[in-house]
Amino acid sequence: MKFYHKSSIIQLHFIVIILGFTGILGKLITLPATQLVLYRMLVAFIFLFIFLKFKKTNIKLPVKSMIFLIIIGTIVSLHWICFFYAIKVSNVSVTLGCLSTTTLFTSIIEPLTHNRKIKMYEVILGFIIIIGLYIIFRFEIRYIEGIVFSVIAALLASIFSVLNKKITDRFDNDVISFYEMVSGFIIILIYSVLFNLNDFFNINFKTSDIIYILILGSICTAYAFSATVKIMKKLTAYVVVLAINLEPIYGILLAFFIFGESEKMTPGFYIGAIIILLSVFLYPYVAKKYDKRIE
Image (cartoon, rainbow, N blue to C red; front, side, top):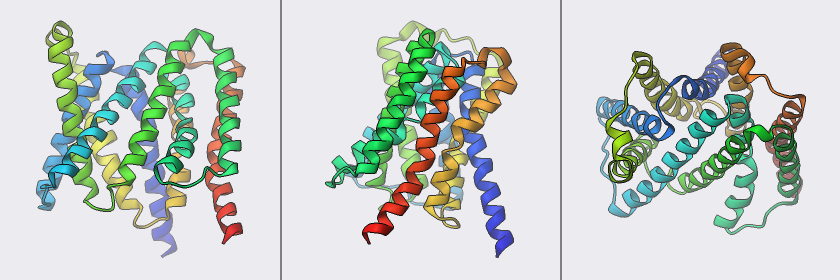
């Protein structure tokens, strides 16, 4: 039993490393952010469709639920566009460091949507995250555009995570993900055809782009999502969330080894990033202690 538990932990960290590799692929792929997300979602929903057919899962949903998932899928696509655009105009380290502010936004949005009061420790940790973000902004002013879009990506990630929570208990997680990928793909496709016609039809794919997009859409999206859902049946949500918080660290380390000097930042960036990441790590620990105290 202990071996089984350890193997699950190892598998979980492997998944988190895959998630951290997403930013690396975003940097390696030469396509603009919008087109990159378009093809990522295309590959992801094709793989999910094949997987659902293999499982013989019924993918029919009520109309209201499909509309809700279309909204979430649109937000997911916007999140990824902002995320990859931030990487294009700055680098992986800045983007992943600022993306950690998702915890801050979730601590505000979730209570508002679930009719509960914002807890004091959430406010304090949120304030500490803002300090970390301010330090990064001050020392990395050259990457201001990347910082802004990273924070917007974090806000959108928080919104779709909270919305997803409202529907995940009602339907199969793979079915939910499938509809979100399909709807996001269709929305971006419509936008590209109507407002970005020339860029949409004049994309020159490199062989490396095709390979990276296939990896991004299949392994880093379809597989990573399904594997995370499966692993949550073996480990507690606390352990899973704590491990996922390592994604920026894995991503920044991978980026440094792959891209070298272009990922080398000022000491101020690392101070700010450490403050944000410490706050993120402290959040589940403090929440657990607080909940025990009020029981």
